[in-house]
Amino acid sequence: MEWGQDLVDQLDLALNESQVCGLRFDAGAAEARLLLEVLALPEAGPIDRDPRRVLVLAGVSSIEVVLRADRDGALGPVLPLESLDALERFFASLGQADAMYGWSFIDRDSAGEVWNVAASLAAASSEPQAAGHTLHWFIECGRPGPGEDWERFLVQGVIRFGSLRIERADGRPVPLEEFLADARRWWDAFERRDARLSADAQRQAQAGAASWRSWDGSSVMVPGRLS
Image 1 (spheres, one colour):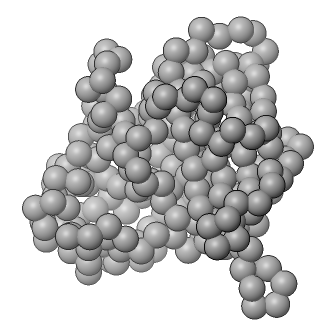
Image 2 (cartoon, helix red, strand yellow; image 1 turned 90 degrees about the horizontal axis):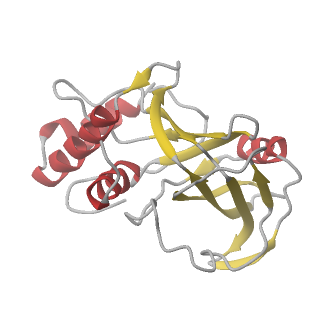
């Protein structure tokens, strides 16, 4: 499938309401792996009970991550992350995270970048890469704080890459066309109020479903409104 606006639109649809659960980066291989839990409806049968996918980005020139506290919608100063291990420890500390929303993640206009602040964490590949595409991702998340309070955060990231592919959690490749079709089918069924996406069907799919993390996540999506 060739790059173009149609592919960008389909990727944006497939990533909408997905949950980012981790980021790996191999500077030597110029490869980033974004751990996701996605909305996927197979051609037949119920909702996929293993929503885990890996967005494998090749030809990566650089990654940037910005972490800030979110205090009732007011973002605090940038919090430093000294390494990818520190980012992983942050992900592991969370008790709750929401899915991405907004329908625009691939090849967004990144002039000045979306945050206009220095990154918490920045890394570049060992060799220069002709990265012609960008992926912007984010999570709004939280963890238990002192007493009964919760600490809230916004994490944003940008990855500059050349090409992408999809894998399942066990490393099996997922054809890009299948990944896009499963997402498109989910959203089409959502709009049609298909019984396979009823509130009960979604709860059943979520109960005991495979997950990258033990977080509480976004709630069931009921046709007619977004959670």
